[in-house]
Length: 164
Picture 1 (cartoon, rainbow, N blue to C red):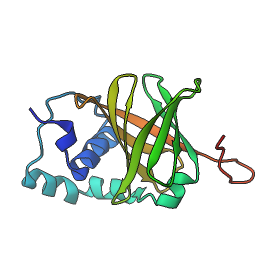
Picture 2: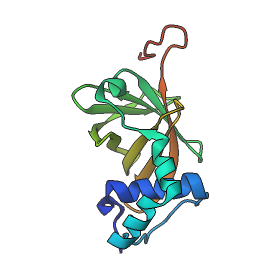
Picture 3: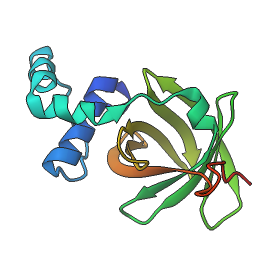
Picture 4: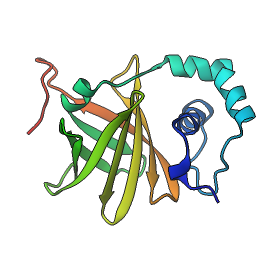
């Protein structure tokens, strides 16, 4: 059985592409790893290339410049506070209790790892070129995948962060 944590960044992008462009539903284990031939076919397909052009690499300075909100279909909403030392604080939007996690950039993909309410989360955020609402793939306890939307918060008038 394939472990989600073993999926490459490209395989994670392909899962997100299938969800966004083909309307795929939540994926559960087992998810078979792609062969080299499958990867080559998908990544040279016109619709995948166009989808990738809609995305961009995140930069470290823009990650720490804002607090961020994560939204899921199941109505879970989390508030994220990024620090320059790759420490991440996570809390519910309506709660002031936080847990710590880590963040890092992997070739422009923002990767978050943390334990929250006794579940291990591995989230990959891919920035959109034309929207401030970004796309994310969330792996929970290495057993299931969910799709999220992520929004950096800033003051509309001044463009400054809304950090507490």
